[in-house]
Length: 247
Ligand code: MF3
Ligand code: CO
Image (cartoon, rainbow, N blue to C red; front, side, top):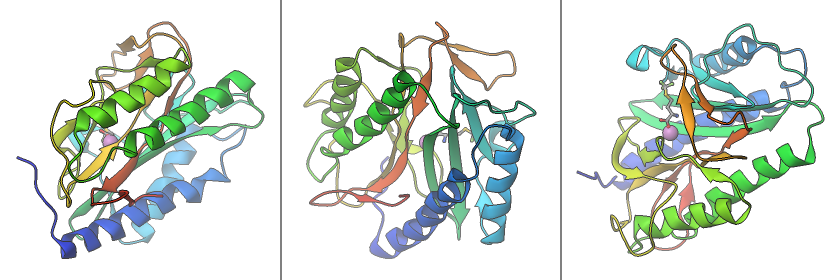
């Protein structure tokens, strides 16, 4: 069942979404060589709680932190710890916020100091994938249009699109219907309607799409050791262009 948000509920999604985007802006300038992944999590946690909001990831299915911090070949769900960021690393930070019972979810991949042109290209194309996809995120279009646009853009650069993890509807819960894959066929899938709110989150590998899971039950890496990037926003569907709630 896909829940259509009422105008007053969208207002609450805007508030949660803005805090989510602001949490990521809050750390952007702080990320540099020498910072640990645990420090990034601490900044995020303190920012969210200072806004009288709740970090949605903390305790979610037992997840032990308020942010996912995923370095280099870690695709998603990296657990913050004592790893020290080095010049040339890329680091994906994924954040979820609950405010007044409504959720926001967003992720960015950041450069640590000076990075290689190849790494920068991966970050840029992953972000572009999001914007290519959401050109189709409007009332009356099908989800497959969005998914296939993301896949086409990533694969046109020779990149792999992660299959096992996908975007999702979002609202009172972090994960609601519909499922929002980053791959698919035009003209297929759920028809998008005004008032749907979804998290669109391409996870793109420099190598193949294959991933592997670590024994900790969370950390997900590229199978071939290649770099991976992540870019996510929560958006609201309407007649024209979607509203991006977490920028
Ligand atoms: N942002 C992730 C998603 O979109 C969720 C992180 S998993 C958690 O599904 F356990 F950390 F919450
Ligand atoms: Co998400």
